[in-house]
Image (cartoon, rainbow, N blue to C red; front, top):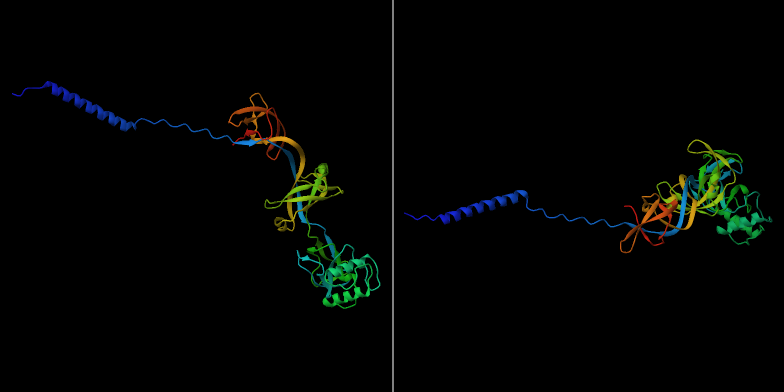
Length: 358
């Protein structure tokens, strides 16, 4: 007979129980996914700050206007004839060039401020003689002294000019063959058709200068917003802006209908537009002119988004110190303009940082 060893069985049984417990524990860990690691806490977002600025605040008012050209003038026929040539709309005509033709006779543009009113010939004297001689010299016909005397040399220069234009060489200048303007002109519109018979005074062309202007009707009550020589900003179609300067303020009050349909008293304000490619794109166009309606100089200002509502009422700002310390300061607000607000309060100084809303 084999001797029984109850101690070994008991040990084997205990080992088996421990193994089962280990397996169950392992299965439990697998099913539970193991112990959960601690989730790290997100860092607070950095503060967004802006500087307290000492500046001039400008409150603006926008008014509607029209972009165009300055110096409109109508050219009328001086003598009867059939219109045989005319320039195209928008064409720029400079000194010494054709303005139009009637019966094949050329009307030439010359620079000057006095209109031609008489036939100029040898022996004549006057400021209109000097003006003619200045224009002839400018286009290359010289040999005379520029003065108030229409001399033999002046007449010789005129004959050379007439010959080059294919005109009868008389040495005299008929006022029907020249048109004086202060500078280059632009054809704004053509009033007569080719082949049309022209009587004296019949409109032939409407001209303008090359100077770009905006004309803005200003309410009489807003007259204080503009001054001659003052700068403005002009918004063009498409969103681009150009600088402008007020060059004339009308004195004639006009009745105009506003956007609500009611009548209001206005005066026309003329604004010279700075030369720009954007402005050259349009002959005529609606524009918006930004005028300064109020001004506060040498004030402390912060972005409007820096204002906070204080529990006890009123407004404050959150000052941010160099080390990141913060404290709320009560402020008195003043003028609002351009996204900024005038503020005053204890501890506020130019260069200090304030927290702004994201």
